Length: 367
Image 1 (cartoon, rainbow, N blue to C red):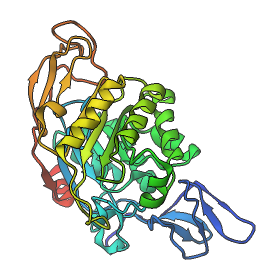
Image 2 (image 1 turned 45 degrees about the vertical axis):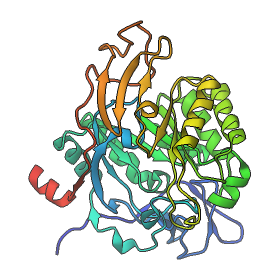
Image 3 (image 1 turned 180 degrees about the horizontal axis):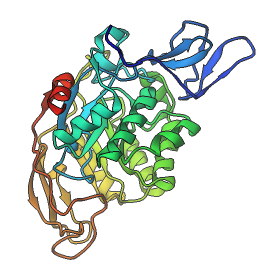
């Protein structure tokens, strides 16, 4: 009989309650579970009087794509990353763009099986600079993501968390010890938006942003998906960008990206390019050095400029890099001002390609 890797594993962050239930302590949702129940994320649940992860090593698919798609514009530009996720999510966003994975309650759809060492070896064999834990939130499969990150680091592969930042203090500390970069989805800037639209709360996400910026060396970028009539008012964008400036500083890149109708918000129109440009302009006015537009074709809004002299440092057309005006040490060739971020001497040349990967075929090729 074939030996199959264990895909259901015990976890650490939980405690027993006086009424016989067990509370999961990974995220602020604090699901309180009876035997056999799953949390809202569905991949963590109670079995044998403990909380277990039911999706270890199981993925909804793998793809090699540009790091700029995460989006990360200041972390190894032009390189490729091996991206993957599992199933489930600890928020309930009505506008979810990956609902077929993040809202999945069908564990059998996780047909791709890959242990951490296989992931790292595959990423290296494919020439990837990193692995990105994305599609659904890595917070809910943190043990798998951390083990993959450790395996990757042994082979020189970086790890990227693409996350909503909805995590409690203790697991937050452990999780980000294993990460090299993060893009945090700041979904809006009001408690009402988080409560009504996302089924969560704003403050835990702000706490994650503060922690990443001030207590770790993880490279941080922020994304806000602007939804017409929901979180795209000038007042809300003013508040968001002022908070970032005052609490995180001017060098944290902020991406304003376009919404398209999906999941339970199909009644909303797509975001107009004008709204994205307005948000970018507000961020720059409020002192942020690096504001971007995304999910639209906007070469100006997607490119990086020197904060001191305005020179075009990294030109982007969608995810394709053009002009590159950085020195080998990451400084502007015109005035010598350092660009915030993590850069190689030369940009990568992956371009805008998207390459699905059959992990078992890749593993066979490696072996």
